Length: 93
Image 1 (cartoon, rainbow, N blue to C red):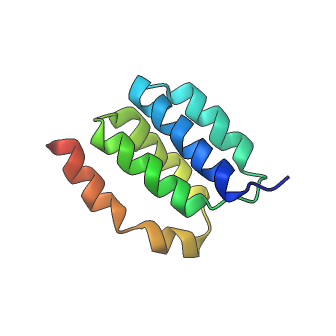
Image 2 (cartoon, one colour):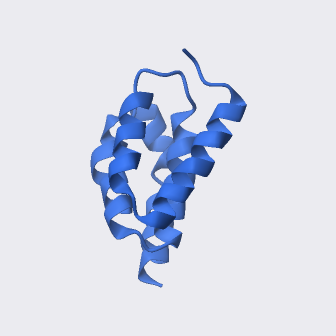
Protein backbone atom coordinates (compact mmCIF):
# COMPACT_ATOMS: atom_id res chain seq x y z
CA UNK A 1 0.00 0.00 0.00
CA UNK A 2 1.31 3.46 -0.81
CA UNK A 3 0.22 6.74 0.65
CA UNK A 4 -1.17 9.55 -1.47
CA UNK A 5 -0.47 13.24 -0.87
CA UNK A 6 -3.76 13.52 1.04
CA UNK A 7 -2.75 10.66 3.33
CA UNK A 8 0.53 12.42 4.07
CA UNK A 9 -1.37 15.58 5.04
CA UNK A 10 -3.72 13.56 7.21
CA UNK A 11 -0.83 11.82 8.95
CA UNK A 12 0.90 15.15 9.57
CA UNK A 13 -2.32 16.58 11.03
CA UNK A 14 -2.86 13.59 13.31
CA UNK A 15 0.83 13.50 14.23
CA UNK A 16 0.74 17.15 15.26
CA UNK A 17 -2.28 16.40 17.44
CA UNK A 18 -0.33 13.60 19.17
CA UNK A 19 2.59 15.98 19.66
CA UNK A 20 0.32 18.56 21.31
CA UNK A 21 -0.89 15.88 23.71
CA UNK A 22 2.64 14.57 24.27
CA UNK A 23 1.58 11.11 23.07
CA UNK A 24 4.93 9.53 22.22
CA UNK A 25 3.50 6.01 22.31
CA UNK A 26 1.06 6.71 19.45
CA UNK A 27 3.79 8.40 17.42
CA UNK A 28 6.12 5.43 17.87
CA UNK A 29 3.43 2.99 16.76
CA UNK A 30 2.47 5.09 13.74
CA UNK A 31 6.05 5.61 12.56
CA UNK A 32 6.69 1.90 13.07
CA UNK A 33 3.84 1.05 10.72
CA UNK A 34 5.07 3.55 8.13
CA UNK A 35 8.48 1.90 7.70
CA UNK A 36 7.09 -0.46 5.06
CA UNK A 37 5.01 2.21 3.32
CA UNK A 38 5.88 4.43 0.39
CA UNK A 39 5.61 7.86 2.04
CA UNK A 40 7.65 11.04 1.91
CA UNK A 41 9.51 10.47 5.18
CA UNK A 42 11.72 13.60 5.01
CA UNK A 43 8.66 15.86 4.80
CA UNK A 44 6.88 13.95 7.53
CA UNK A 45 9.94 13.95 9.80
CA UNK A 46 10.57 17.66 9.19
CA UNK A 47 7.01 18.75 10.00
CA UNK A 48 6.52 16.57 13.09
CA UNK A 49 10.00 17.21 14.53
CA UNK A 50 9.76 21.00 14.28
CA UNK A 51 6.23 20.93 15.70
CA UNK A 52 7.49 18.92 18.67
CA UNK A 53 10.23 21.50 19.22
CA UNK A 54 7.79 24.38 18.88
CA UNK A 55 5.45 22.80 21.45
CA UNK A 56 8.39 22.08 23.82
CA UNK A 57 7.89 18.32 23.65
CA UNK A 58 11.49 17.43 24.42
CA UNK A 59 10.84 13.68 24.80
CA UNK A 60 9.30 13.47 21.33
CA UNK A 61 11.97 15.65 19.72
CA UNK A 62 14.75 13.64 21.37
CA UNK A 63 13.20 10.33 20.29
CA UNK A 64 12.89 11.55 16.71
CA UNK A 65 16.46 12.85 16.64
CA UNK A 66 18.19 9.92 18.32
CA UNK A 67 16.05 6.92 17.33
CA UNK A 68 14.04 7.73 14.21
CA UNK A 69 16.54 9.90 12.33
CA UNK A 70 19.26 7.19 12.11
CA UNK A 71 16.75 4.83 10.42
CA UNK A 72 16.43 7.16 7.42
CA UNK A 73 18.65 6.62 4.41
CA UNK A 74 21.90 8.64 4.33
CA UNK A 75 20.68 10.96 1.57
CA UNK A 76 17.53 11.80 3.56
CA UNK A 77 19.68 12.39 6.65
CA UNK A 78 21.87 14.86 4.76
CA UNK A 79 18.77 16.71 3.61
CA UNK A 80 17.37 16.95 7.13
CA UNK A 81 20.47 17.80 9.17
CA UNK A 82 19.83 21.52 8.91
CA UNK A 83 16.64 21.36 11.02
CA UNK A 84 18.35 20.24 14.23
CA UNK A 85 20.03 23.55 15.17
CA UNK A 86 16.73 25.35 14.60
CA UNK A 87 14.85 22.71 16.60
CA UNK A 88 17.31 23.01 19.50
CA UNK A 89 16.85 26.78 19.44
CA UNK A 90 13.07 26.42 19.58
CA UNK A 91 13.35 24.06 22.55
CA UNK A 92 15.50 26.55 24.46
CA UNK A 93 13.20 29.56 23.97
